[in-house]
Image 1 (cartoon, one colour):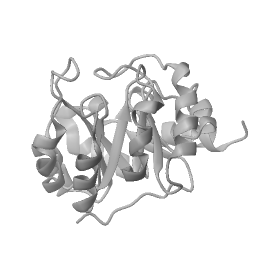
Image 2 (cartoon, rainbow, N blue to C red):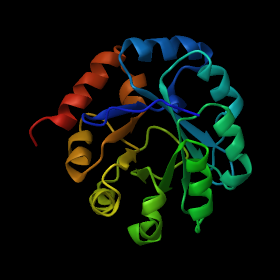
Image 3 (spheres, rainbow, N blue to C red):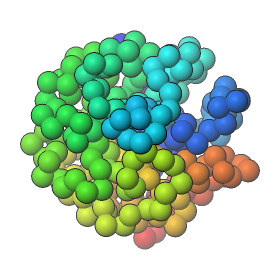
Length: 226
């Protein structure tokens, strides 16, 4: 069972591996380790729930054997229950799936937690908080999408920030609130002020020449005076 956890007493950057250089995957992981990243965020896409394909459990499992970083798997797939065991076996520390894919998620959330993995529930920009509100007691993580899922590099949607605040109020105190999409130096402070603790970032890390400097800058903006 996973034993890794995160220090959420400070803002946590979650580098989105969707934007990494896959020709040099392990070099990217080592660079993120050297940059003192706590975690890797794995965007899993099936070409059905979202109009794009990425990687699956096999890739995650191979990387798992090479690093002790916390693995957060974001399953943007139509049937997460069918593939859950593959991602548990791959060594994911948190597994998040979408309320739009599983409108009655209690059983699947409990399956994830029973495996010793943190259970997360994500909601798309158009989905109201009321869709996930009945299930927050079974969530270790709640992920607010601030873009429509499927592709990196999209513009941040500020209209989702009230949902971050609502979920922070509804969730268990120890649950983590994450935001994903368009997170960068210009958007992270408002996201933190709304109540987010985990910040999934792709282009704003991987398109920069110095990953450590990019992450420290965003962490400071999230933690600093607002």
